[in-house]
Length: 322
Ligand code: UDP
Image (cartoon, rainbow, N blue to C red; front, side):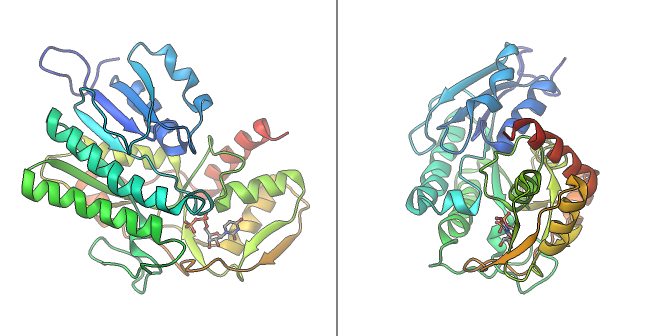
């Protein structure tokens, strides 16, 4: 298949995906390979898995580098998607200093690599930059409500600092940068022990274990199916150079966590009970993206409904749960 954009010599554009063996990263690698890009995946396999990318070795244009984004990177690339960072609260809180440094030092390394190659950086930012929002839904104009010293800060403030670095490189060094703010994403390929709510609920329901709702379950999230999300990020990367974002990429259908528990129970036909546990510190009460910018500038909006997406995720977990 021909690539959308090719280099001057006609060869495929060279794309680096940091964190490419992770959940979103591996879906992104697959979509890029299918579009004809030459893809290098860089991952330290901390929360990513070789199994996620095994199949891609059948593409001659795929390569894997086992490395940490906090170390200097030296390869020739045209575009870098910077996804390297643990993203599940349980994973990023295990090594909070490492998480913060991955966002700051890792992003710094990616930006410097891009400077040397004349590449464009697509930064995977997050709805976490809005913290526990007091504006609803969240548009890109909102600056957020983030605790700088809490358990989530290593990720939230790390991602905020990474955005700052991106825009300072753009302003002071004229680097081409595009920032996507990714909202809660789910789908096939998630790890059984990922720790995020959709995977936890499905695994609990399939095993017949209690479905554990944190807090009273009235807190909300807006869940985006991974293929929708990846299409949005690729459209951003292929968009006009004047579009740098930040731009929200997510599904605006808002669901409470207790509603989600009932949807998962229904779709798995599970007899699991629903039980309540303490709400973790600084858990945002509500979250919903305003995606008008993505609709206007990228002509993108999500297509997969929550029920259909969860059904696909259930199929995936049925295959891997012992
Ligand atoms: N949650 C839950 N049970 C779980 C995991 C998460 O009730 O097993 C809740 C969590 O407290 C939060 C929401 O589900 O309110 C989403 O959590 P997740 O860790 O998936 O992502 P977040 O948006 O908080 O980063």
